[in-house]
Amino acid sequence: MSEAVDGVRDPRRLRVRVGLAFVRTLRPALYALLVASALLTFWAGGEIGGRELPPKAAAAAPVLFAIFFVVFAVYRLALVRAKKYPAATGLFQIGLGALVWVLLLPGSRQRIGQDTGDDVQVLMRSSDTRVRALAAEVAGARGDAGRYGSELVELLDDTEPAVRRAAHASLVRLLGTDASPGEEGTVAQRKWRDALRSRGLVRQAP
Image: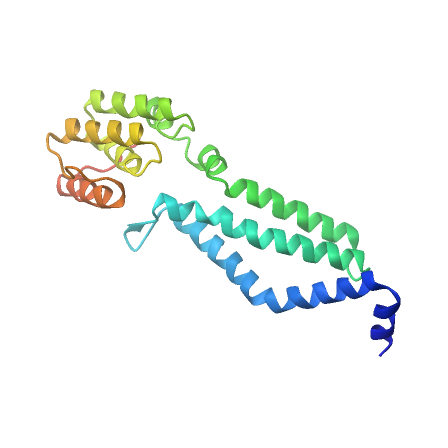
């Protein structure tokens, strides 16, 4: 009863209470978003059951976490404003969440965990479209399908057509056959991976 009276006296406190109650009802969905983003991030780091996560699905991880983070930050700030949560702890959690989101971005994951291999392999992961396309072309000229085949297959689902074309042309040059004539994306990737496995070609350490 006293809370209802306080709400009538101070409309701002009433709005805060309504907002907090709304977020509490969304809590299961928010944690589901958090778990989904964690699973996608973990899967993007390698294969699960022999299957790799498509790049477009991997890109969904930071988006899902961003939705969770925005609602979480609003919820924490509302608690701090209502004096129901320590301000220092709330701000620390928000800052930590922002850092996690930055680390989930594709560019950050590439810089942290994927700068391995020789110069051509590293350049094939560049954020610059022209650099990726040129590196894919150079990989085909080097004639080492075991070293560059897997990297080129990844580029078959690149967002830029020029990169996809260069990767496809290099794979044809390296293997001497076209495993995916007229096809792109995940379908082409699957066929080229099968072609590499059938020849015993795997990524080799530099």
